[in-house]
Every structure is written in C-alpha cells, then in structure tokens.
Length: 118
Image (tube, rainbow, N blue to C red):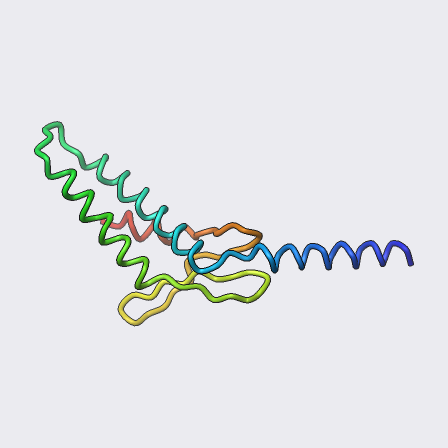
C-alpha cells in the first residue's frame, strides 16, 4: 500500500508541474520566430556572394520584418492543460508544427523542410 501511495503522489506532482509549466502562446510564437529567423539567416549566408553591395542588410531587414508579421498572424497554440500544440495557418489551412511541454516548445522538422525547398 505504501508503494501505491508513493506512485500516486509522484504522478500527481508530475501532472501539477506539467500544468504550471505549459508554455503560453507567446512562447510558441517566439520559438517559431527564432527558428525561422535562424534558418533565414543561414540561407542568406549560404547565398551570399563575394561582393558586398549593401543589399544584404536590406534583405535581412525585410526578411525579419516579414517573418515577424507572418508569425504574429499565422502562429497559434491550442492549450490542453498538460501540453499545448503549436499550429500554423497559411492560406486557410492549419497545420500542427510542434508542441509545448514542461516549459519548452519543440518544433517538428516540417519547418526546416519547408524552408529549404527551392
């Protein structure tokens, strides 16, 4: 009987921790924003030519602004109390692209795959 009580208490504690550390919508948006910005910066560096003509800075600024707008308007999350699902809506279609659990947001590789399509 003592073992059952310990297991039950442990499960309840884990559930309470999961509830209080479930990431909010702002955390989901920030994770998507930082991931896409990182991928964009990586792609800019790969496409960079040896001559620097000043357009790289403008492209970077416009790209970052576009990313911020896209994330603010397209990313949302569904909260299921213990965990949350990151969703992205584009052209009327909603896709699950990640999940939040224990204070962290984990994104699927779908973002990197979609971003790297040429």
